[in-house]
Image (cartoon, rainbow, N blue to C red):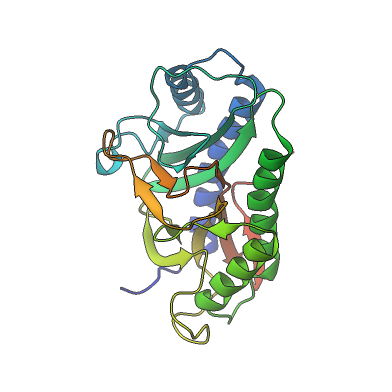
Length: 255
């Protein structure tokens, strides 16, 4: 399937969706507190994004039961909100999508809860830094596999590992579309596959593990993804548009 190319007017609509996500993530980061349950975090995020005039796109998507993915500690992505209560020293990944008039936004952050360990600080910093590095290295004409290879090397040089089998993705008129953008090189040749072009819109989302890249999907909730090593993980995501050979971060909060 061909990768969609969007006109500037389309990207303006996607930018508005991205800003709704950015505002919601900022709101959650400022208001999540020790003692809250994950279900309370989900409800808070859903009410806020609805107040902006957008629907939470994850709710019901592929059967997901909530508006916000709340990925606690060892869960790297797709955490299902439940009655667990946030404690001092936890780290929480929050991932949320928006939809309005058939256009989609999507981004994620990992938040420290209270005072966290130095290891967890480095873990969170790695996913943030990897995302920044990836965005700065995007160039029109480069292959997505080249970008994946750069991302993998950056993560490993930081002392961590990328999660296997999950990836960034195209986004626009659907929540997920081509291309799939891995955080590691699949195969041995980065000089193959589709190239980055003007008009493309996609999400980059480094998913960082400590000792094993192998994912384990929770048998009970069928959603939560952990590393095989059982250690804590981190995840950050931005929605990117390529316009006139420049990169625009659609989910960067406009100040």
